[in-house]
Image (cartoon, rainbow, N blue to C red):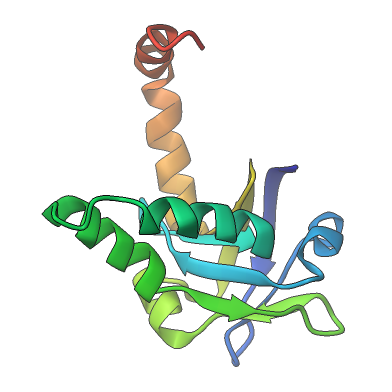
Amino acid sequence: MFIGEYKHNLDEKGRIAIPKKFRVALAQGAVVTRGLDDCLFLYTIEEWQVLAEKLAGLPFSQANTRAFARLMLAGAMEVALDKQGRIVLPEYLRTYATLQKEATVVGLYNRLEIWDHAVWGEYTKQTEVARNEIAEQLSELGI
């Protein structure tokens, strides 16, 4: 299970260190792809396979499902941890997520998200302001 927030820097080669507590789960490989809200999603191979199968099973006759599958699948890249626990983020994904130097790695149960640190700060501020409204909407879903 991935939880928590961790600030890390990207180096000049586009590498980012994965928090130490998550490295064992990612040791067999991982997949990074375009996420939502201008971040990247990082999945274990097992979780990626579950998601990819769901995406492949969507009705391709609907434009929105094709677009979402393309966003997630075409943008995906397998990555491996190096000896220092880093992964290389491809340039096209760094550009997509506007990643510069400082990043925040966020654990969200079955995936990690990688955010530009400043963008993550703005996002959390907005979410914290709207927390009561969000909680009310989620209560309708039984949460």
